[in-house]
Each structure stands twice: as C-alpha cells, then as structure tokens.
Image 1: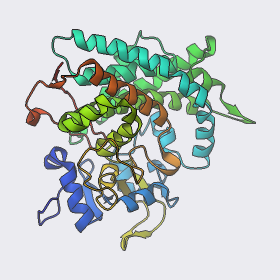
Image 2: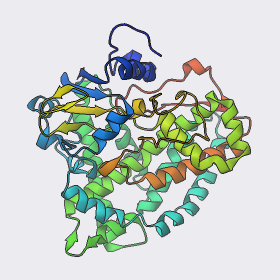
Image 3: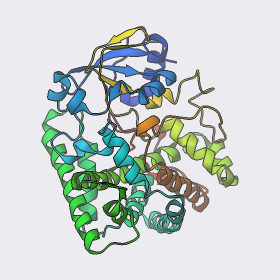
Image 4: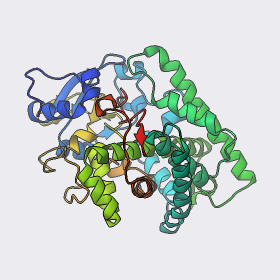
Length: 405
C-alpha cells in the first residue's frame, strides 16, 4: 500500500506509472477526493471506494449530460465528451427518459440468438489473427488484440473494409490524444466527426441493402410508436464502432500481460480452459479497459461521505480503484482466475452498464485461451520494466506488448 504522507496527484506521470498505489492511498485517507483536472483546470471529485462508486453509478441525482448539468467552468473546459458533434449525444451521455427509450430500442439487437450467432465469426477471426501473428517478424500482442475486435465489429455491424484504416485512425486520434495538450482539442473533435460521418454512410448503405447485422437492426428499430431519430441512429452506430474496437483491444492486451505476470494463472488457464468465464471476469476486475467512468454531474447540492458536492460538480467514478478495493476483494493485486465474490464494476452498473458487454466477454474469452493454446511458450520479448501503459485518463491501454512465441 502507498505510504506517502501527502495526497497523490491524479493523472500525472506517477499516477500513470502505478495508478493502484494512488488508489490505495485515496481509499484509506481521502475517499471523496477534491482535485483539479489537468485539462481546463476544472475542480472535481474522485470516488475511490467500491461502495461509493457503485452507488454513484446508479444515483439519479447525477447526470451524464455535461452540456445540461455541468458547471460553467466544466462546459468551457472542453471536457464535455464529444461536444459540438453527435458523439456528444450518444447513449452513454443521455439521461432518462431519452436514455431509457434509446437503450430499449438498441438492446433489441442483442438477443440471445444473435449473441450466440457471433461465436462463429469470433472463432474464425481469432484463428485468422493467430495465423497472422505467427507470421510476424516482430509479434506484438496488441496487433492481435486490436485486429480481432476491429474485424468482429466490422462483420457484426455490416460495414465493408474500404475505409477500415481511416476508421481505425480516427479512433486512435479521438481516444489517444495527449490530455495535457489543449491544442489537440480541434483534432479530437475532427476525429469524432469522421466517425459520425462514417456512421451516416453505413446507415445509407443499410437502408439500400439491409442484412442480418446490427446496423440494419438499428435502422429498423421501433417499439410501438417509438423509433430512433436519425441523430440517435447515427450516434448509436458511431458509438458501437468506437466502443466495439478500442475497449476490447485494451482488455485482451491487459489480460495477456496479467497472465504473463502471473505464470501460475497462465498455466492454470491453459490446462483448464473451463475456467475461461471466471477468468474473463477476473481480467475485467484486475485491469479493466476503463480506469474511470465518464464524468457524472451533480444535478443538485448533495453530500457523499460527509463531503459537500455543489450542483454542477463533475464526479469521477474510480472504476479500477473500486475493483481493487481490499474491503471487497482479498489480495486484489493478485490475479486469480477462479475468484468468486463481489461483482466488479468494470463494465459499469445501473442504467449505463455496457451495452456491448456480452460481445466483449465473448471476444476475450476466445482470444486469450486460443493464444495460450497456440503458443504455450509465450513470453515477453523485452524486459518487463519496458512495458508501460499509455498516459490516458480514461482508458487502461497498452501501446505495445512485444512477445516471443
């Protein structure tokens, strides 16, 4: 546990090097922690304990809509997610009743039959990606981890590969910008707009040529007199493109690194693949794709843990801090693929739990065991101290994971 006497600084270089030491300090000494976000110098609150984070995620006194509920300082800071584009109105930032209606219409696509049908393309794409990795002169797990969800998402959404590279580049620019560089704000906005425009093109194509894919289902989605508006439809497809690729890439990469750091667990999963379902949950808990949740804004003056939170204050849910809270998980920084007990919060909780959770679990549950089976001598190609996560406030992302097969 971190024993420093002074409060750590969130989102600085030391934090990115070891966020879990920071979380340990905060949970014990300052669980409702006021700090200033580095972009825009915005005052906000960080919650680090499991119970507080879980309560926040389902507390209707908070909103995900920064444009409607955020303070003037927050709205002017440039931190409103996707501000100025349709990304700013995606499902993850809507509040009821719009959120309830749009999510109900969208979730009609995630039937048990459809999710079961995704197993075949996932198996096929993983096999193709393993073959590609084996032929690589410099095998990198992150190339493997990135291509799988990209190909799967493309097939499930029904888009052609003609703009595949452009789409991936836009995602990279949108989610991997330097948080300390305000000059990148315009570039991030342009990247979001590219994804929105691609969503529009895909919708036009599926109106002309409908198929058994998610985009076609979204185009046709209705429930009684309700149906998705054009803007809601475009933003839904755009967020599926974004969330379907980058987050699963991060999860697969972090899972493989966690297994390399815990060879006993790697051996256990290789020898007993029946542990895969609990292993995937442990990967999510141990080092999930998101460090934190998107900002939630207090809609009224309130208190958390005796700390006053004025209306309009952004509050950050420390997802990975909650998932490593020793009050809920014994020896939380030990990977245990058979772990049972409290459900993690890596995929959210309440209204805004991850819509694509079933697909992320499926892809990870195929990709990781298949990698271990194909390459039983898998090991790092560089010293462990050379492996670092990106300095990204939202995502827990490895830029590279070079291995020897």
